[in-house]
Image 1 (tube, helix red, strand yellow):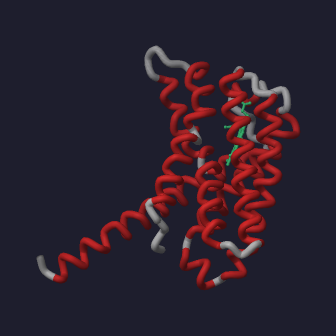
Image 2: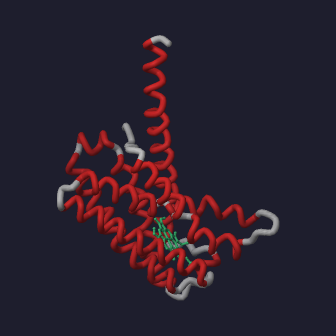
Image 3: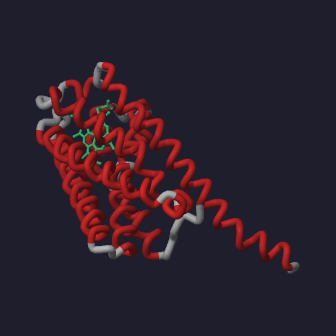
Length: 211
Ligand code: HEM
């Protein structure tokens, strides 16, 4: 094996990681903008439209959580952190504030969902874990424990990203023998459990984006 091919091999996982982080960022921006569309009065899909707490909680939730999803991924870019640490700090504070608005609004919506108990407890668990992970991340930053801060922010964003994975599962409701009424309550769980498991595996394997 030549030195050149050895160098190529070491670079490949880094390139893969950065492509994945860019893909995550692009999907987050797309779904984040979808959340912001509530600002211009876009009507909700049938399930959430029947939520007893729709007004004002659904627009508040969609816009605040949508903004959190829009700004969250950029916090993981080491180049931005290194070059503009003040931007990282202020964006981080904004993300935490948006989660502190979007989380309780999501919790109220979860309690009032029209989609049954499976959906209710799935979304409720997600809301509690999301707020908890974000609060832990913020506390660790204040204590200047940046290793724990990074780990909790990774968990927090894996949960924020549930908004993307949930929407990726919805087309399955068009399959024969499945329907929106079956798939939607399941997405309240499968939108975030695998995300959290992957984040945990990634943290334990020492992963970090090399960009
Ligand atoms: C991570 C914690 C989150 C929780 C606990 C949560 C919870 C909920 C709940 C309970 C509903 C109403 C569902 C129903 O009544 O059937 C909802 C709807 C919605 N959520 Fe979230 N959500 C979270 C994150 C996000 C994020 C990050 C976004 C970003 C875009 C988002 C955007 C929306 C939108 C747009 C709706 C309305 C339905 C639609 O238009 O697709 N949520 N959410």
